[in-house]
Picture 1 (spheres, one colour):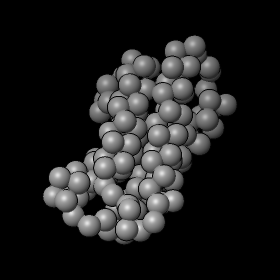
Picture 2 (cartoon, one colour; picture 1 turned 90 degrees about the vertical axis):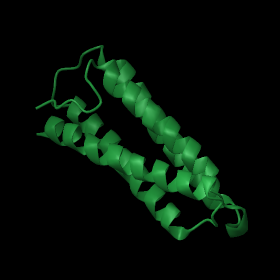
Picture 3 (cartoon, one colour; picture 1 turned 90 degrees about the horizontal axis):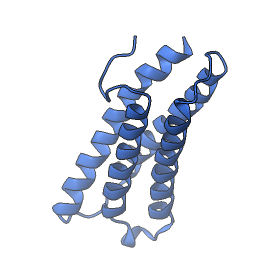
Picture 4 (cartoon, helix red, strand yellow; picture 1 turned 60 degrees about the vertical axis):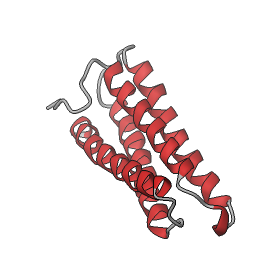
Length: 130
């Protein structure tokens, strides 16, 4: 059951990351003023990644461990760190200095780590595992 939840939650994480990338790209390339909607989107994306990591760790205790998971685990933790770091850096800036650029770069990096982490266990990013 935890494995199915972990596998299904992946799609929410990917959709959330895609929304962050698109919203940040429109804001960055359109030279728009930073909006609170960006902060909310990033919070949802980061929260989903954290939930995914938590469910993934729980799934480790109910399924047999395989050494192939080591790369997956480290890449997914890297994705969570990048997403959280980006959100924290922008949040600490004064409101007039906040921009879309860090969110765009951070979300692209996090999504790259996620894609690599999924492929590290021999699955396609959008491949069903059930």
